[in-house]
Image (cartoon, rainbow, N blue to C red; front, side):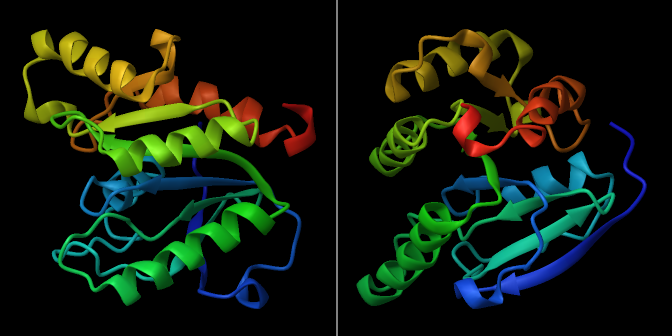
Length: 200
C-alpha cells in the first residue's frame, strides 16, 4: 500500500462531530497502552501523526485520520485503564459504543492487543461484539519485537484460545518498530475498505 498523504481530519466525542462524508473507515479498539497510536503511525509511515500518550488512559476522544483522501483509520479511546474513575470509564465506554453502533462508514473493527500479555475479559467482550456485528475478527498483536520470534506462536496461540478464535490467520504479530507484517495487514484491510457493512 502506497501512502501518498495522511492527516488528522477530525477529533470527536459526539456523532455530530464525526466527518460528514461517506469514506470507509477501519476502527481500532484495544486497552490503553497496547500501542494503537504507534501501530497507526507505522502503517501510514508517519512518526507522530497519531498521538502517542505517555500516560495510559489519556486519549478520551475518537481520532479520525484520513489517508490518501480515500479512507480513514479511526483510533478509539483505550479501555481498561484501572486508575480512571468509574464515571470516567462509563464516559469513554459511551463514546466508543456510540461510534461502533451508529457509524455507517465503518467497514472493519480491528482489535489491538499486546502480544506479551493474555487478553483480558474486556478484550473478550470487545472481540465477541466485533464478531456478533458481522465483522471479520482481525486481531493485531503488537510489540512482537519485545519477545523472541520463537515465542510468537506460543503467544498468538494463547490469544486465540482466550478470544476463542479458530482461524490462525486472524491473529497477526506486528512490530511498530520494524513494520513486520505490515504488507500482510494491508492485504487484509484493502478488501474490507472496498466492502460495505451489509456485504459481510
